[in-house]
Length: 127
Image (tube, rainbow, N blue to C red; front, side):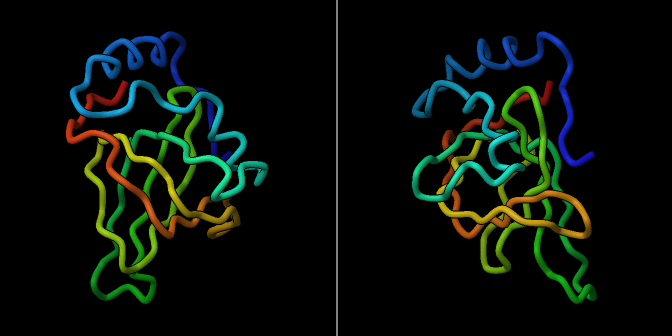
């Protein structure tokens, strides 16, 4: 399964932690992972805020040099594949997806991220 339910109560704990962040947005985009996985969220119509809860940087010898992320809306998570020329966000950071396409990566639903923005300079504990 490419996306799954997070621990009960973790989303509300994260919202409480994140709502006090300086200079950033106030909350993750509720329910966006399911819409991204199903392809119903269209790039350009929404710009979801997600937390990076995992990251796998490609080895230099690998033929696919893209970084893989696990992104979460606080309830579910999904695989995200960064474009080769994009910088890697820090694990725990909250990012805003600006341009992406939905698809399949190695048999799993994924979003292929062409552009993103750092929502806040803070890095948050992953719940």
